[in-house]
Image (cartoon, rainbow, N blue to C red; front, side, top):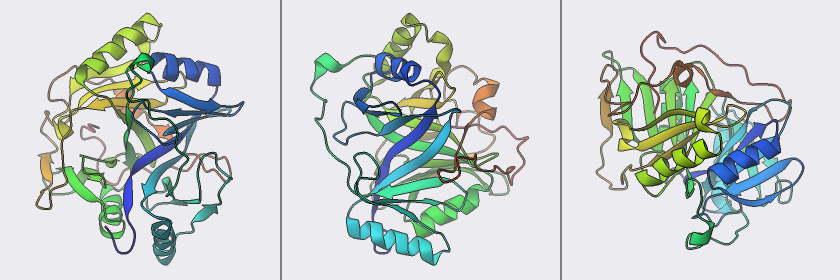
Length: 329
C-alpha cells in the first residue's frame, strides 16, 4: 500500500504490429495465447490462467511500437487517488471513460518520470478462465502476463519514483562499485517483479514477460516454433538467470517486438524480505547458465509511441556509462 491507493500488478500491454494475420499466427498458433476477440484493428489475447478479457493487445499500425503498458489497481477510489497524486507531481493524466477502450471501465494514462506511457485501471470485463481446458493447451501453454522490462536513461530516478511515490518494493538490484543503481527489479505482487528498469538509451521497452508453468513448457515452445518455421524468432535461451532465478526464453515476433517466456522465480511477500544486491561485474547475475546473448538483445528495444500524436517518444542516452556490459534480465 502506498498512501491512499493500491497498485496490484502488471496487467496489460498494447503493442503495434504491421500485419495482424502474421502476428496472430505467431502468438496464437505458436505461443498458445487465447484469442478473446478481434477486428480489423485489434487482436485481444490472454493466457489460459487469466479471467480478464485480455492482457496483450496487438494493434495494427504502419510501424511497430508500444502504445502503453498498464497496471491494475484495487478499487475505483484507488484510481482517483492515484490520479490526484500524479497531478500533485506535475503530471497530466488523460482519462478514458467506460466504453472508450474495449473491455475496460475507467482508466487513465500518463507519462512517468522516465517518459514511459503507463496506464492504470481497476475493472476489466471477465471471461472464461481456461486453466483446466487442457484441450486448449498448445504452443507454450501460455498462462499469464508477469512483468515489463524497460530501458531508461536514469535508473535511480525511476527507482526513486516507483518506490517512494507509487509504493513498489525492490526484490533485486545491480549496483556499480560506486553504488550507482544500474538496474532494479520492482514489484507490487509478491514475486520478483512487475517492472524492471535497466540502464540504457530510453525510454524503450525491452520486453513483456509472460509466465509459464514449468521449464518443459519453454522447451516445448522451441519445438513448436521450429516446426512452424519460427526457429529464427528465438533470440536467446533457453537458459537461467542468476538474478530472479528465472528459466527464460526470449523471442521476437514477426515485427521484432520482444517477449520473454518466464518461470521459476520466487515469493517476495514477507515483510522482512531484503533486496538482493548483485555486482555489475558478476557474470552469473544475467546468465547463471546458458549461451551468450546476441548483440541484438543488448542493443535493440521497442520504442514507445505517443498515443496522442502517433509520434515515437524521444529517447535519451543513458546517464551511466553504457560501455560497461549492459546485461538485461
